[in-house]
Length: 214
Image 1 (cartoon, helix red, strand yellow):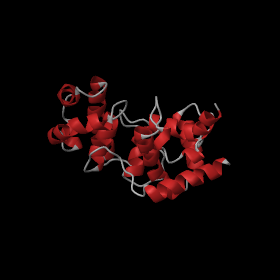
Image 2 (cartoon, rainbow, N blue to C red):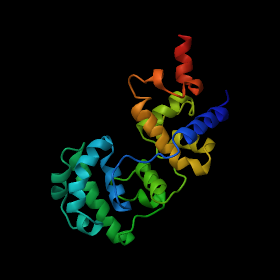
Image 3 (cartoon, helix red, strand yellow):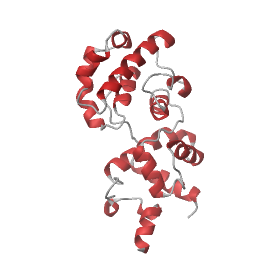
Image 4 (cartoon, rainbow, N blue to C red):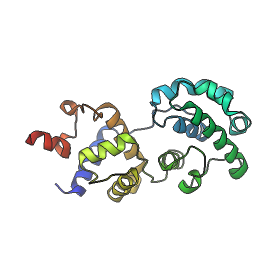
């Protein structure tokens, strides 16, 4: 099976069986999504969703967050991983939003990455989810699943994975494909013991193919 065929099979499966796939982070507007994605770095969406209701109530708009101290924000996110750094990032992000972007979340990936706490993955998520741009955010789930399936080859960085994926995924499918791979990695192709016995993609999976040869 060629790489192109493998992509086609995987995309066809998900298109039929999971036509709707979205982030599991809870948010109501672009600002809330940006805050939630910053908090989700090396933390579960479930944990983030537990703290954001109170956080959003206290800091409903960037103006309010920008006027706060990182110590104030910390009190709301202390159960999240790396709360000190993330509190500083959130306040810095809100201040830059107000000072440089008039309070509006930018749509450009490069502009987004100027914001404190926003790396390429986070920028791609915002560009994709908010502005429906064909950007592929690569987190640990996407990185792992793409490699196991054989969608990527010898990739050692998220950027390499991103480039290989967007080369073969149709532009109109890139945004949803990000969610397909994340959810598959979160619930089936888990890190330590992938659930190959219930995986619907084994016929196209290089990892499973190798297991069968052992």
